[in-house]
Image (cartoon, rainbow, N blue to C red; front, side, top):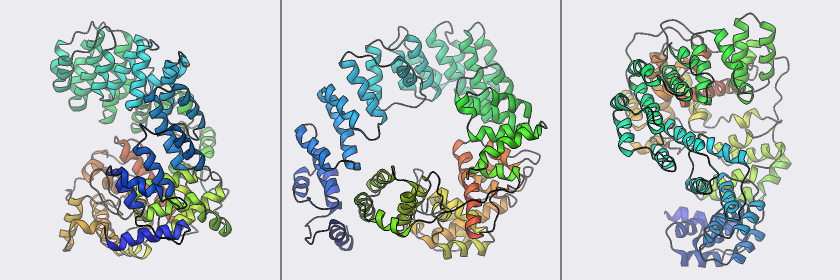
Length: 632
């Protein structure tokens, strides 16, 4: 670590601790000692941390370092001294896990009651305590837990195993979990749960179904439950790459099978056909009704939207469970269907319900409704409240952690400290973060208000000279560029994705190098975090794909996320409405990305052009082009 940064760390203790004595260490040293297992050194730091702003973190790490042997009174003293803080809540969660290890079940139940924000692991630990104390949880809670599609972590997996041992779980629920895990590609988990039944999955059969699904299907023992579940798994694997072959084999596979197996199989084929834009999807879904997954129900609607089969759209939405039908997405598309079926008054009523929202579907609905009758009211942070928030200990801790480069801890501290604020204080906190250049937390905080809205805090415009300069130089709409960057990085200059993209515009290394070569610029990988370089390369590439795709910003936005070839492959041989194109993008990440970027762009237009109407007008998607596509 550089001398400048080390001195900066000490200065933060002086500035934020309120004491005139410097330490021989700083928060970065303490964090490194904890992470590196230097616990004796850490304890010395903890012993001299009283009165310092971030001292609670050092003492928290010291307790964690010896949690398996620590006296419970020490833990309770920490809770009392740091009541209401993030480190107290975090330690309580860790302490509950330790109490489970110590089998101190009554103590665990008591700690659960003290949590400010119950967490998934906590519920699973509570069920472990119930089992140990001879109490059976509510049957409905157990059923909901086993039916959820998400993967379980190690604690909840242990809880699930305990439920099986306690015979709280039926064989039907076990096989339901096997099917859920296979549907989501969690093969080892599926094998594990099948082993709790009288007829476990064969490892040899599982391997064959994964590696050669067609061969497995030719010899599957469909009279057994393991054979039926693996046949569905193999059918899904085959349909992803050879849909026609899967469709050909399906009738024979489903012949003489229980209705639940056949229905699920047709649902699998319907989903895979829908994701491949195959018109047969609707007929497969029709043979699988009622559909048993949120994803399948959504794609039944999307298939009908893609085909502009508005009666089918309406029917599919009307078949949704109430909690899904009430979502803005399906209200919007129900209104679209009603409008195209000449039920204009009913359509307008639905659009009016969601037009008050500022999200993608709200903006689209405003466009369908015409000019908004009531103008949006935007609020600024109150200066006195800004000063008050800046002095809060939690906010100061978060800012100090952020300045010290401890990003994850800073995020957790900040999010905790703003989670129960009212709107005035949320806007004030967002203003504090914005002034500190912590743009992503400013946006996060401003987005969590309930009634008061600040457009300029939700849609910040940092680096304006650079971004507007390069945008206008290339003929790009600055609002669109800002909307894209907000979604890509939230203006975190050093942001890096899991796939290697970096900087404001999240450029992949090969893309950045390709653009630099075309522009004749000297470039090396470290330059991706320089605001000017990243903006120059990113706007150039955005302009490049915009030109390749006929100047359509929706196509270019999809291409920026998923690649130009994919964006083109989702077009048709005829023009189509942009909202239809966006809604039927088969990649969930790209579909969500395009919606958010286009909505962001509309809000940024309002920021940059205050008299602009807040509606979302999307250019029609042209018929697929034949020009060559070049570049990464």
